[in-house]
Image (cartoon, rainbow, N blue to C red; front, side):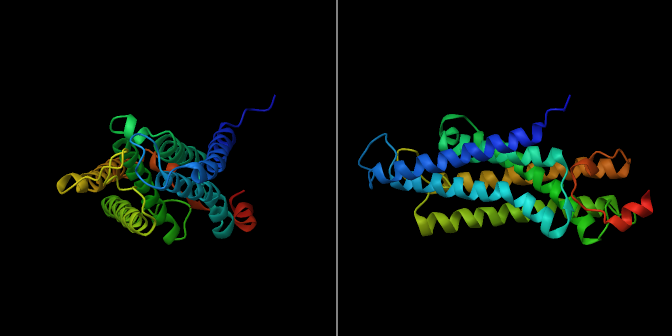
Amino acid sequence: MKKFNWRKFINRFVFFSLLISAIFLIIRLFLAPAGNDVPYGRVKSDYVLMLVQCILGLFAMTLPGLLSHRFQIEIPSGMLVLYAIFLYGAIFLGEVRSFYYTVPHWDTILHTFSGGMLGALGFSFVTLLNKTDKIPLNLSPLFIAIFAFCFAVTLGVFWEIYEFTFDGVLGLNMQKFALESGEQLMGRAALQDTMKDLIVDCLGAFIMALVGYISLKYKTGFIEKLTLRKKKSHHDKRLSA
């Protein structure tokens, strides 16, 4: 009996959830009022934000396959599942289903989670830049952990720059400087979401860097299960056989 492929099921479930949501949002975009004249209803800018996020999510779902094929990279199935779950939680649940507003600390949980995933990606870059299929043993575990931490935090900063830019260009509210009702926050309150995101990004990255350091230091092999590696060529497979 063929074993059920959970990774494919989760990926397809997330992909079609985003696709159906995008179609629904296009319809709602034409029907929604333009301004904030509806006290508790969504306006066009809300649907623009959700539609942009869904489209980006659909592209993000295809990105691992494109990168794997283009650069001959092997992506662990566990990392792909975590990646799909994160997109589902951030876009479908967070934006479309309004979990960012209705579920306490939802954004904080996701940013901490993403900081950890980016930290794991930082360990992967060490292997890819050194053109090996394993983390080089000649490098200090502390150096690799610090690199992974800095890599994850840098990408977290880039994400906040992206949110700030598109909030200004498209009139969105990704940085949550306004409440769901449209009321804009002022002063320190308007900065709180961005600063909290950066802090928990650092926290998630630090936890993953620490786990990776322990894994490398004591050779537990845990971090290797989450790292990307170059695919072996037919020549390499024959040599290792």
